[in-house]
Image 1 (cartoon, rainbow, N blue to C red):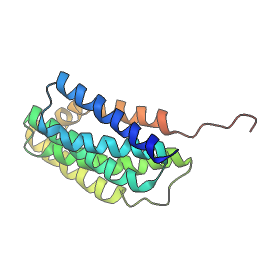
Image 2: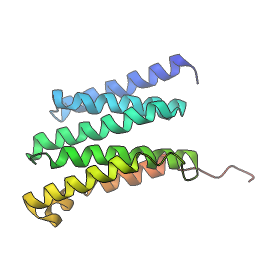
Image 3: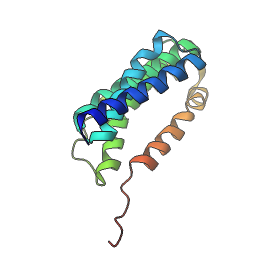
Amino acid sequence: MGRPSVAGGVLIVLGAMFLLGQWMHVGGEGVVALIGVAFLAAYAFTGQYGFLVPGGIMTGLGIGIISENRLEGEGAPVLLGLGLGFAAIYVIHRFRDGRWAADWWPLIPGGVLVVIGLFLAAGQAGLLGAVGRWWPLILILIGLYMIFRRRPQPGA
């Protein structure tokens, strides 16, 4: 796929995300997530790992910032979003590549940030209350699995 196709795809995703932001009344706090989604779209079109890393980090951080502003979580949503963004790098690459990726480094900062975020959230609302608010992320991870999983080739 050529550069114009990638650039066109990124513009389509950005336009759709900005429209969604307007409808959901997400302001400037959504910019980080939008930029991350644009990087993820570039990764989806090209398969280049260099787009996945900033895409996962910025999308996770952006979702955390949006959640922080909506929930007033005193930092826990940002840490959880950022940690899950790091973990998503590994998960997405693993399912797109079709085997366990050798680049497991994102699990280290991701795991540390998620654990700290859960402890912070547990101090605010109790552990079950904190996890209960984040169940939609499970849906997102399942969706990512469905999109990026390796499908068997016909005749194989």
